[in-house]
Amino acid sequence: MDEILIDRDSIRDVFTRIKPYFKTKLGKYTHQRISGDWHFHGLGFVNGDMTYVFGINIGFFKVSTKRHYSHVGMNVLVRTNGINRELRLKYRDFFRKNLSKWISDDEMIYTSDRGGIGSEFPRYKALSEFSSNDEIIKFLEECIDGIHKVYPKIAENPEKLFENVLRAAPPWHDLLVQIAGEYSVQD
Image (cartoon, rainbow, N blue to C red; front, side, top):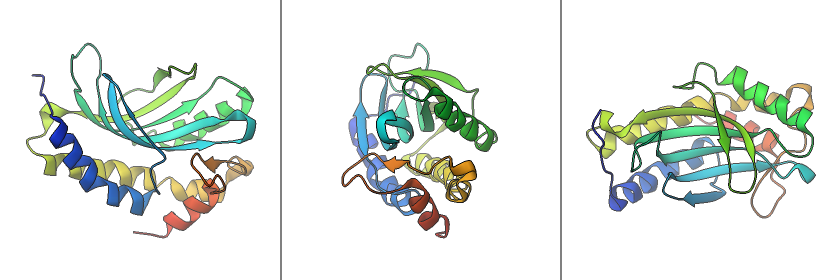
C-alpha cells in the first residue's frame, strides 16, 4: 500500500467532528498525546495506588516502519506491570475476551515512556483505505460503537473487577461502573 500523508488540518477536522460522538457514547477525553508515532485523544482510568490501569484511545498511529502516521482507529491499552499485577492481568483478560471480535489485528505489546508495559488491543485501518475525512469519521464511529457495546459488561462489574476504577482526570471521583452504566443506556 502507498503511504498517505495526512496533514494537521485534516487531523484537526477529524478530531473536531468525532469528539461529540466519542463523548456521547464513551465519556469525556482525559488526555491527548502527540508524538512522531501517534496523535490520539484518550479516556484513561486509574485504580488507587495502581495509578494507570487502562485507557481507550482514538486517533492516528504510525505502524511498523512508516515515516508518518499510517493508520487511524482506536485501541485499548491495558498496563500489566506495576502494583497488583494479578488484578492488572484480570483487566487484560476481560478486554481480551470482550474485544476479541472488535480488534482488527492481533493483540500487541505496548510500552510507554513512563515504564508501563502491557497489552494493546487495536482496531486500525490504513489511511490509504480512505478517500475522505467522511470515510474516516464513519470508521471511527464504528470503532466507538464497538467499545460502547462493552460498557454494559463493565457496568455489571463482574467479580467487582471495576469496583475502584476511576476516570483519570479531575475531579477524580467518576467511577467507571457509573460512567459505563450511564452511557450504556444511550444509543
